[in-house]
Image (cartoon, rainbow, N blue to C red):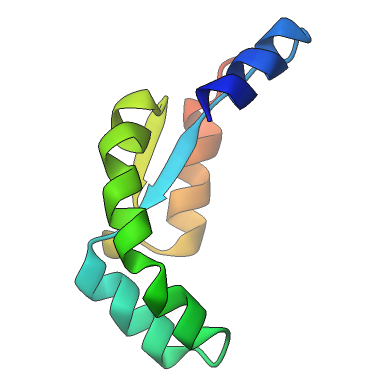
Length: 84
């Protein structure tokens, strides 16, 4: 993934890496309440858990979506974006 960010930056693009995060219990609840790709999403929770070890430190912003509404999370991201 750092290769992707480096390539974008090399191309002159500004990269703002926001991670939408929630603890695993909340993710499981959301997945089980959804009718969309439940088996695949549940099967990939372990991969997400292991990816957190590099995603969280590499992020410009980590948004805990477990304790706020989607609109509040979007506002937090919009407020954190760098200016022009």
